[in-house]
Length: 70
Image 1 (cartoon, rainbow, N blue to C red):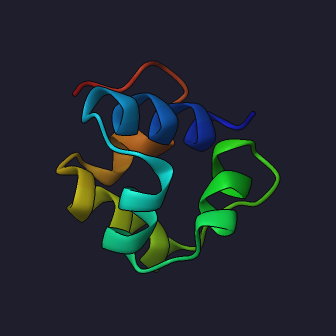
Image 2 (spheres, rainbow, N blue to C red; image 1 turned 90 degrees about the vertical axis):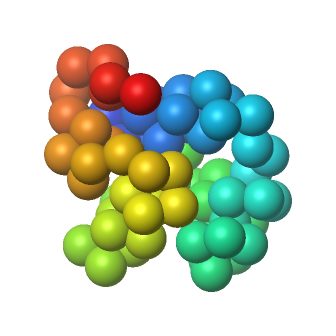
């Protein structure tokens, strides 16, 4: 799992959101979100910014190797 995948999953769970809820809010497919969380796919910059906005965290927290501040 990539740093991004671990971070997005952790923050999503802290926000008590399902994968489907986050995918809808970020306007991506649920299968795509699963691939991001599992590290099978790396998002482009605009997608990282969408997640940052939806989850209300800095984009750097999603990309950080360390645990993100939430």
